[in-house]
Image 1: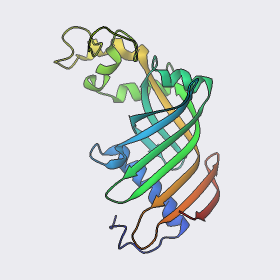
Image 2: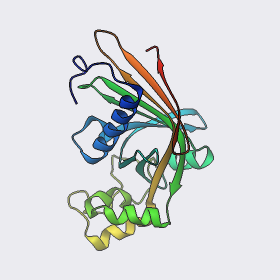
Image 3: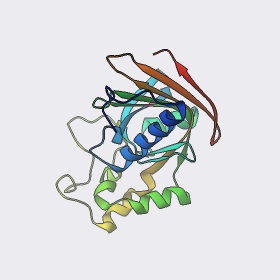
Length: 205
């Protein structure tokens, strides 16, 4: 993509296509700015934010995917209230994306099985922690079994993390695109009804 300072104004169709392309590219490239995003949920105390890896983006289904330990607070929060928001920022492109929608948590189904099989033993290591994420400890610790701090688990060892693995799928209901430029910012919003685009409009930044 060209520098935002030299890119001509885009149509709403182009903007939406570009936004989803950025998400897809980000989910596939660990060096991309959109490889990680901020995921927001609602906790009993109020909004709760954390940085997560974007594992997949599906423009046709208007969906995003991330992973979690099923014992993490965000899973309980989503089961209580599936409203979710995402924010992504690319400082090079000066593009921000904000997504809101409803999340579903997958644990013991075929979708979760498929994603688990696609992960490597090294990526499964975080799910091998004994204490649940957020458990108070008297000393700094990863919570991993002895020895796994310094080496990757074997395929057989990594299997113990499967019960802790969850896939979070967000059905995007609204997407906002913001582009910052010295010559004047641009902002657009898109609303979806299921997988169909229901509304697209320019907004004042």
